[in-house]
Length: 97
Image 1 (cartoon, one colour):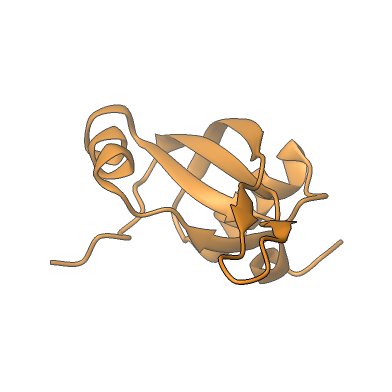
Image 2: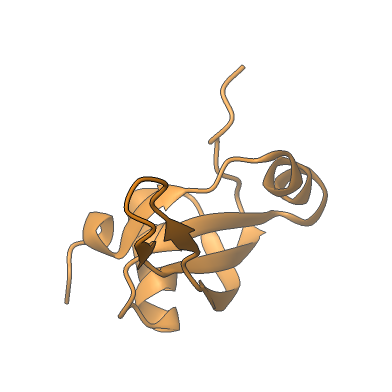
């Protein structure tokens, strides 16, 4: 089994995810591309104490194609895998004020 910090790379902090965390108890993380749903759930429970995961939804966001202005070459940004984690118990303090 992998280290939990290798599975979960970083949280996604935006206005939309902030509202989802307050209203629905769902948190969004960028995760390792090969991470499975059970691995993600175990990693969240291991990193954050007193948290129980209800369900995990995953999605892969395709990287954008970008163009270089000077040489007119195109390249592609890397794809990212995100996990939307719904909690049944506890909460995660990501947004410190």
